[in-house]
Amino acid sequence: MRKIALHWQILIALLLAIGYGLFFSTNYSISTKSLKLLSKEKVSTEVLIEIQALEGQEYTTLSDFNNALEEHLGISQYEEYKTLIVHSAYSNPAIEYVSWMGDLFMRALRMLIIPLILSSLISGITNIGSGANLGRIGGKTLLYYLSTSVLAILTGQILVNIIKPGVGAQINFVQEVEGLVEKQRSFKDILVEIVPDNVLTAMVENDMLSVIFFAILFGFFIMKVGKKHSELLQQFFTSIFEVMMKITLFVIKFTPFGVFGLVAKTVADQDDFAGLVNSMGLYMITVIVALFIHGSITLPLIVKFIGRSKPLQHFKNMTTPLLTAFSTSSSAATLPLTITAVEKKSGVSNKISSFTLPLGATVNMDGTALYECIAAIFIAQVYGVDLTFVQQLIIVLTALLASIGAAAIPMAGLVMMTVILTAIGLPLEGVGLIIAVDRILDMFRTATNVWSDSCGAVVIAKTEGEKLEV
Image 1 (cartoon, rainbow, N blue to C red):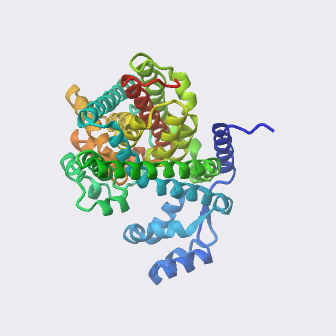
Image 2 (image 1 turned 135 degrees about the horizontal axis):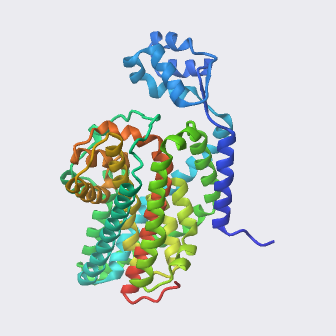
Image 3 (image 1 turned 90 degrees about the vertical axis):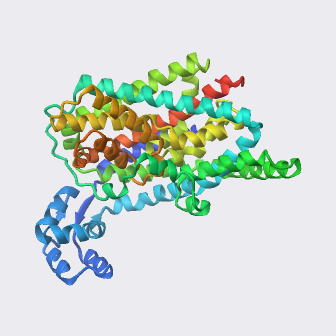
């Protein structure tokens, strides 16, 4: 019997997960089990008595449940205990039976990220050879990333100004977002913190920019030591990279199960999807169409005319990592699969892929930069603010700079948005307008990010004179 190709397995799992999640939607209810869990978490007796009044009532949406909680507890106690109570009231046995597969898959991918990035970057830099070669390839890589990010932002800016999704929009899904101001950092802080004060802490905390900085520095100075030590270290890190790729190929086999668990939970937990689309549909369409234009026109043209390669063939080769990126919403978690596809299928050398792809997964955020630009202008339109040309230019520049440092920030997309809103003088509460659809759009923009990274590897490999499979 002919084996089904992995990308078809993932696509089937994705479609089944959507159906499963829609059929088994999540409910919220206070039960005896909920009260016991909250008691263990040292929730005050007064609060337990208040929410006991809700016992036995079932809420089909999180917003309805939150409204009932706020009504019974008052604002101060609601804000203090909301997260704990919602977690204890979550009720969806059918999803809990399958969501563990997604959690396990994501843990396995995250387990690979740091050793893979370290070994691939150090191995790639030592294979590049001289500092001159490193400077040339590094320069091309950064030029590509900056150029595509600017093109993505301009695409989003043009489309949002033509469609005007925020003008006259009736937004019924405004949500509060906590902790954004505390997490907001200046671009100067992000640049300073690229240099880790403790590289092991940076690895533990998945501080990708710091890890990449250390790996580039370490790889560069391997080439500066004596030949005996240089060859030993080069073989050591190349061997680690080969082992990591073998583990990656093993983990990839379980991708359909992971995708099913992740997507089923995401769909099931989505509040009132039909109402959400009705309220935010035009905004979602604007973002998705802009991402589609960038991914299906701009990037393929760059691959075709600058990389002198076949974009359609390369897209087919990238199906597995793109579907995984869409399902996981994580460029970094998809990195092992991206490296495998770019090397094994599109024929890019390890020298190029091991340098450009880890860097791209961290600093090349075309989809995210485009999304942030559209979202900022959309929020301005909702508030009735007519942005000047200078303000829109500030959005373009801020989105570009913020996207470079996004990986160094917890809650990256939302915190980036606060940076942009602050720069043009809009209220930070505007983020609450878009948070309801952020998770859905995150899937599309992450796939765009990964597609751009892979196109960059092909273009740079071709400009270095490599013969590719595409």
